[in-house]
Image 1 (cartoon, rainbow, N blue to C red):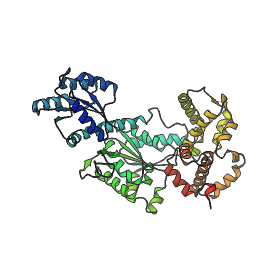
Image 2 (cartoon, helix red, strand yellow):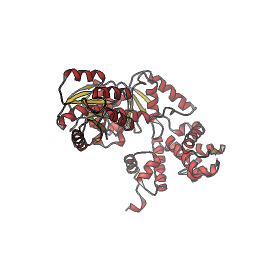
Image 3 (cartoon, rainbow, N blue to C red):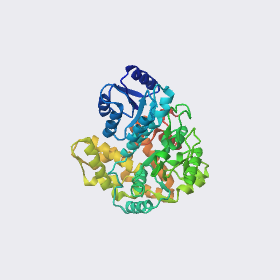
Image 4 (cartoon, one colour):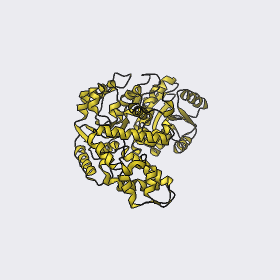
Length: 460
């Protein structure tokens, strides 16, 4: 919720504006002098200031404006005055005020004048938040041949401005690859904006992508820029694009072809310069055959394909990854450091890791929490691996299985087993299971439906 500071030495005006803005859904603060306004802006998170020019208590509005912007140059300040004085209005604009309102003014007029700046403040905070979600020290960990080749591909494609389609199983680190492409590109000083298409209901995807105008649909109480506009000049990462509706796909294709977006509820065309990096754990060729994905969009996105290897194809990296996750997790926990017995890595490397790196990180975290000794042993690992009890005598059967079964079938079987194990561990609580697997609940339901996984006591 945006916070507006009302600065006026007349209590009645403070009260009227505060009540009106509160009814519009904003948080309001008041100040009766410039000095008080400066104090409020230092102690509170203020998005916009409505500042009266003529105040008898202490410094006037002009001086207050100067000091407010000296204190916070990015603060949005809208001036108010009972007199329509063009010279004063021009002076305040030159000093950095965003607008000039003549009192008295209707609430609709006030809102139309301050809404764009409140939206800009919200977007600035949102962009800062999104950037904060990308750890600066996060990187692709490992020294295997597979990860070395992946790094080389990233460096090569980052130098161009071509569309990239990243494929790979869940948990392999597709977003890390997208972030690395942006980091090494010429757009690295511009925003990297991610959007998980599978995590949003279909009716909200278009609003998130293209934005909307106030009143465009029920609940659209203010104008909102979409991810394309937020990513202007930078990179837009569309994760799980295979879950995007055909309608939204058509609009994304138009943006790629013409570099233009239209917010919902608007006919105004806005130009954007965005590099698209997309990712999917689905086989998009099969999705095209099933009529669920557009062929033209597929080839537009897949100018440069990158395949992220699953963990079972880079087992040599497991010791490095285990220690990397252990160091970071223990640093955050503030607990006594624990060591891994060297035979632990062999135990890890004998497992097929259907959940990939995400699953490995979860297992390492579980071991650090559950084991109360300073050294973690192979027996501890066997206790927490979802299918650890059968691993000692399955090598011959697994070899036959691999010779006679397509890879996609093996992957599906492993993923199904992993989901079943997680469901059992969490008492079939969907929310807890989704959190443990680090997937959206909607994705978990889709997987359960795909593999016909039903809670035993509900089967008929």
